[in-house]
Amino acid sequence: MEGMGKNRKKFKMPHALVIMVGIIFIATVMTWIIPAGKYVRVENAQGVKVVDPGQFQWLERSPVGIHMIPYYIIQSLKSKANLMYVTIFAGAAFHMIALSGALQVAVGAVSKRFRNRAWLFIPVMTTLFAVICSTQAVNHFIAFAPIMVVIAMAFGLDSITGVAIILLGGAIGFSTAGLNINTAVLAQKVCEVPLYSGLGYRAVCFVVFLVVTNLYLVHYVKRITKDPAASPVYDLDLLREEKDVDLSVFGSMDWRKAGVLVALAGSLVLLMFGNIRLGWDLEEDAALFLVLAVVIGFVLSMNPSKIATEIVNGCKSMLGAALLIGLAGAIAGVMSAGNITDTIVYGAGQTLSHVPRIFLGPAMFVANILVNLVITSGSGQATAVMPIMAPLADLLGLTRQTAVLAFTFGDGFCNYILPHSSALMGIIGAANVPYDRWMQFMWKLFLIWIITGCVLLAGAQLMHYGPI
Figure 1 (cartoon, rainbow, N blue to C red):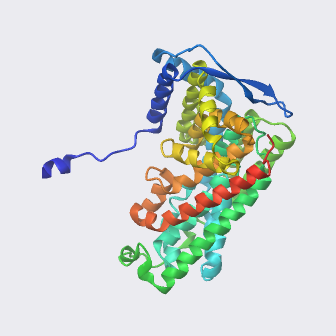
Figure 2 (figure 1 turned 120 degrees about the vertical axis):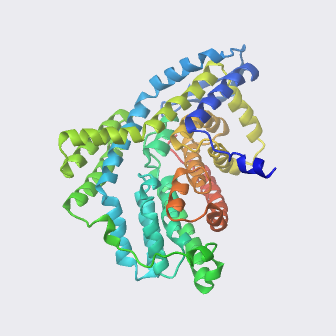
Figure 3 (figure 1 turned 90 degrees about the vertical axis):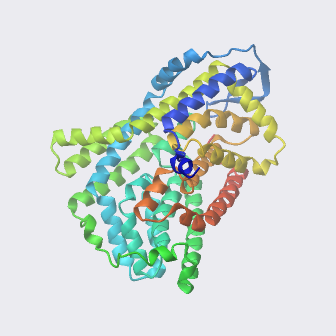
């Protein structure tokens, strides 16, 4: 019996592509089980075709054969090419930024400036990570986690505070800002909502979550300052050997790194201006990211061959995400071919019709959290669920922009409690903070995030957050 226990394999979450193919298979089987139906769609004032809640009709079944799955995958890859291109070339640009070390140097400089003023250190650093991670993945700061832990401990704090500054700040930027190509912008594209729209209310959400999170973190810091043994990692931190840190480990800010930051800031301004004022779409966005990657390469004094090599490496880093976008689109393709998408929307609408109207936005938020337990890829989840959430929003009288906000909240904040989230596990792993100790600190804040998100979504619903 003892030997059997030792030989028992620990469960490992399947690869994201495996999960996605499994969902496509389930969607195909559903076309044989769920009755076919269709809503009539009408064009609204913005020229977008939306569901007419009063016109739903049942259709003859049109089940999809299992042998057709590869066909729908290829069709999806073809139709989602523009989404895949912008994801791949954004990966190239952000890879070049990561190579420069400019963002790490900026974080190090701010840390050095405030390291002797603890009362300012926490809000300043969480805000900095929130701003950076409005466009960047939190994963880029895995290498910075051990340093942030040592800085926090130099203040008399604990290792959880060090990783929390990165993770919580990153969570806010990633989940609220609406600038991330692979989540908010992708969801807006799928829902036919103008790209980079709704930034005003998202800025409000950003500030609200930032204040709430900092209050929680500062309260935690005050508690462990009074009683260090109250820290979930108190016993582990006593064993740490790190006593000080050299913040120059990532180098100093020179004209090249400053040039990279200027190029990044300029490209983001141009990106939003182009999409909001000039009518750009994802093709222009992809071209801008490609140009940004090349410009940064020259700023870093790379020769053309080196630039090409690093662009390819950056593209490779996002190939998995791009394939997830393509595969996830096959789910919508299969359900559309089987005429069950609108049936699912009809059923969900009938169920949610019994929910008080003020709770409809929060209900979408919770639904996206549940989906994120299985599909942790933001791009994959956006492509998989938004084809259902958009018409469901039409049916329930919500704006599609509210549906997008519910998605970004649900996809983003959930990543900081999931044991299969690469950003979470990478950072706490680099800082030697066990997952169970992290959750002792994190579970209350996650509940606060859910409540805060529900309130903000109810507000979005009341104000008819748009456009569309």
